[in-house]
Amino acid sequence: MPGYAVVDVETTGLFPGGQDRIVEVAVVHVSSTGELEGSWTTLLNPQRDLGPQHIHGITAADVLGAPSFDQIAGTLAGLLAGRVFVAHNASFDMRFIRAAYDGLGYDIPVVPGTSLCTMRWAGQLLPQAPRTLAGCCECAGIALDGAHAALVDATATAELLRHYLTLVGVTPGNPWASPPWAEVLELVGTVRWPAIPTHDVACCFRGSAGAQMEVPFLTRLVDHLPTTCGPVEHQEYLALLDRALLDRFLSVRERDALVGLAGSLGIDRQTAARLHRGYLTALARAALSDGEVSDEEVRDLVTVATLLGLSEEQALAAIHEAAAAEVNCVGGSDDAALAPGCFRLSPGDRVVFTGDMCLPREVWIGRAADAGLVAHPSVTKGVALVVAADPDSLSAKARQAASYGIPIVTEQAFSGMLARMAQAEAAR
Image 1 (cartoon, one colour):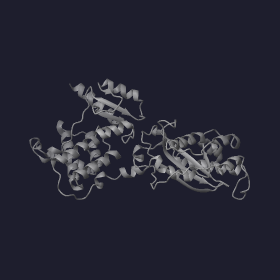
Image 2 (cartoon, rainbow, N blue to C red):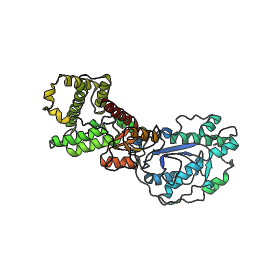
Image 3 (tube, helix red, strand yellow):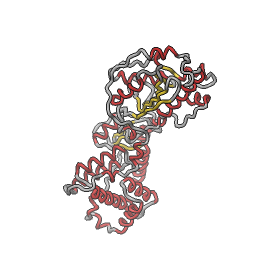
Image 4 (cartoon, one colour):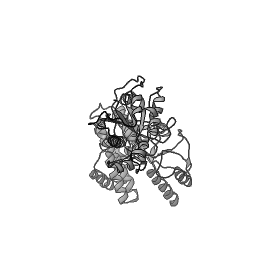
């Protein structure tokens, strides 16, 4: 008797076959009598922005290193073949799975006749339950913690299926009982799946980027390299550091770019640490330019120090060093070459917005216009800044900006830039 493959997908939106794609998929195997047999899940790189991240909770950083659907298509097919496709609101999951395989040129036998929808069967087996998975699980006494994570939802749906099987009398002790969807089981045993090659790729899980972000990127640099780099290479590295630190956040993409550039320029860990300390000292001198360092500026210096793999004590020491330095000596010091650049937006600059932001995009466009900035529909080399819902955004705009070396910042950082523009205008 065929078993069941309980599936859940998280997606970038609601419309498969066009722009929207799968960003996470999970499969839980259930035997014909309701026993849980195993599970599998992975994040997927949709090669576009992630859509409503506040719903599925997946960050672009998490999927940067995830496999694409074509890389796991064969593995997923092996998990689905020969089993009843089960999902809560199965038509939604089926449409996305079919669209993904259609995009690869495969016609798979995941159709209503070979599937089971736990939402539809709730009308007969849990008539008092609402349509939602959470509502059905509550009526059946099934725990559902962390909804909108594919494996969590698939596991809860598998438990709901077990509950249904028990209600209709199909249990490990009574394997000969026939469920009311017996014709689906019969059809599944007759369909054939196309041969889809498998690839040896690692699955990717939520939170993997978080673990990477906790490790200062400085530790990823080579310990020692031949001394071949000089001030020019240092300036190139510091210029990238400037762009990366605009929003006081180092995305995974920015960390990878800094590590890659350091390696290509011959900057080892020791040299980078010295450059970072000089950069921090230069920031402290800039903060002292008005004669004092505010609490906000101290917090900013500590934030930068942490991002650069330096300690809070080193940030405070940089302030003391800057205070002790003679102004007329700064210009001739070696650290002068380490001074951070002054990226500022000016009226007339072009700004591009990308992603599903916390505030409606129209609000940001209006605020940009009020500051004299021009909201541009696409990324060109003439664009000054890209504002992204997620700094690691996989949107075409973000990818183009990264290739041009255009800074990508969060909407919170953009808000701060607008405030500084307003302050500068008021001071004139």
